[in-house]
Image 1 (tube, rainbow, N blue to C red):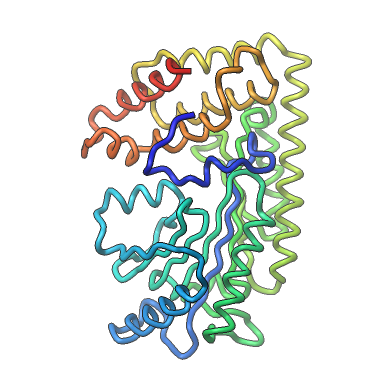
Image 2 (tube, rainbow, N blue to C red):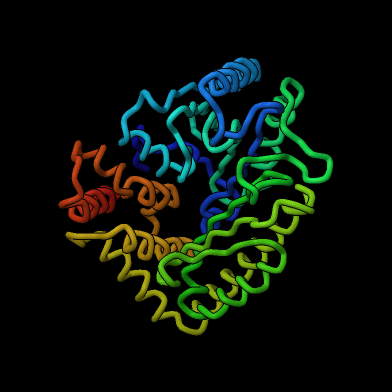
Amino acid sequence: MFADKNIADWIYNKGSEDNIVLYSKVSIYRNLENIRFHYHMDKDEIDKVDSILKKNIEELNLNLTEIKLKNIDSSNINILKENLTLPKNRNLLNATLYTNMDESTSILVNSNEHCEIQTIARGFELKECFKKAYDIENKLDEKVDFSFDKKLGYLTGSPQKIGTAMNLTVSMAIPAILCKTPNNIDYFISKFSKLGFDLFVRDEKNIPILNITNRVMIGIKEKDILKNMIEIVNDILDKEKKIRNRIKKLDKIKIEDRIYRSKAILSSARKLTYIEIIKYSFWLRAGLYYDMPEMKNIELDDLYYILFITKNNHLKNLNNQNNTQNINEIRANIIREIFNNK
């Protein structure tokens, strides 16, 4: 297994069903009572939120490191985003990030909301992420007053988050579904949308990553959202496994050819896009699922590492390069080095 100090260590902590479920994530959004929401705050209010939350976060004794995001350069900001430690599309001008050593737990202060608690884990560990996030939220709730309305629930700067102000996300590798039964995606999207969940497949179903997140946060209890999400993930997990098993039984040569070709391309290519990394490495996950002898030198940890180290900003940092002119060549070089050393 390879390692890089810029990659979040949670990716190496094995989780349930982590051949198919890439990660589970829980985000909880909170604002302090009697202080205006982010977009209307003045400097005194920003400082007040920072002071109150800093004191109470430190008292949790979670061994979190404090990072004033305005004090680090854009490349490190982007690496935090690629690690999924820092959410995208956040206002970071006055933000502070608190995160633990493996970046599995983080608290973002003074961004789009006063406080955003996030827990993330490799594989299908949604219950554990949920418990960890709410343990933190409950302890903070004992110390500070969060903005809450008896009818609406928790109040946020974004109307879409009002209510539970909680977002669950699960990301899945589904090469078999996308290869053999792509229409299942439309069926899942329609079926689970009625339960208040959004399902996304990138690039018009050309990339076999399925992201699932709850859209509805009002009029429903947190534990019911969790229960529904677990049922949805199990449904899709079952479908992906059944298709993998069926194509291995009915079309053995074709599926083995696809896996061997994927390994050969990753081992030999001189240029690779990140989309190609996803496509080919996901078929190697299928090879590990089938326990193919030719995959004995490849571990699932390697495939997780590949997914993160080949993102643009990780590559730039690794090569001290600030442009993307030869980024696909650099990506291919890194992958060849990994496979040639196995």
